[in-house]
Image 1: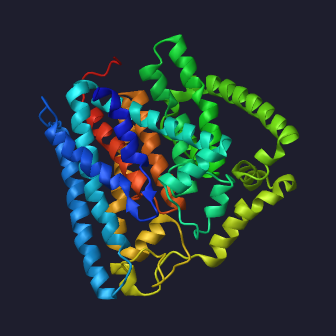
Image 2: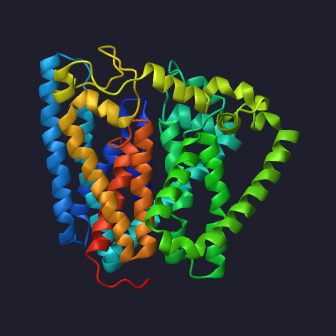
Length: 430
């Protein structure tokens, strides 16, 4: 029984909502899973030795940053406790994912990394199903927003969400949701290699492609951007390994576009309200700037408008040296101060200083290069891990996401799977 609910536990450690914008149920589930890993009957908690070093590094990092945030909080006299809560949550999330990994290890042993990565994909597909249900059935959308997430009616996006014009599922960020849902497609080479061992299973896996695309369009344009970026990166770093799959990729893309075009024409001719007045229309308008979808522009800027705004209004470096070196200690969204910049690296630079940025981002890039290189040991899993880590970094370049709730759990699962792969000697798929 316990083995069967492991994907459900993983889902809760990724997508458990923040109730009312304050109560973080994700951290609660992380704490409970960690405790459960110690008190399971007939199973002693055990974690592979090769995971202890990365786990320790994360815990030390989180602990140091909690102390640092307390110092900044005291120096600036802020009322904003965002940074302390964020780094405290890092410690709890690390322990939660570690506890979950311990339970997985007791069942899967040498298959640990592949199963973790495969179940991560299943969680992303499950969230895509929730997004589709919220779009098709308004009562489900209302239930999620008013009962599960318990969104504040005064929130500026409340009306848009209630009308189903843009759907973020169980998350609070549309853009991040769209980016993460693109993993439903980007992880397919690994999923097909790992789980597509029969014709029926492969067909079921292929059927998730339109589901993932629909979830991306309903959330925003970030997922499409992410797919393009990662395909370019793979073409640069893995071209010799993937060039034989390019004809198959072109055929599959043409097939998807043909089916998608047919569905789109049917909707625009028979149910235009399901396109023009929703995030589907907004996403198409951002890409094409077609006047037919101009009514959707009120939900966001066009691509050119966004670039112009970044160039004219936003800035990168803090205005004073103290903030540049040591940060300001807040969230940049409180009443104490506001900066005109949303990208994650800029927000982190303003809030925590240059030393934090120097430690964090090069390390993430280092792990990404390890993931890309791991393809030499296990090509498909290396691609899957690289797609996950790249996705988190791409989303963070648009909105502060690298240490957000969902991203931290997603990245830790990929992080532990990567260390499993680097230490694994037997490479044949089971």
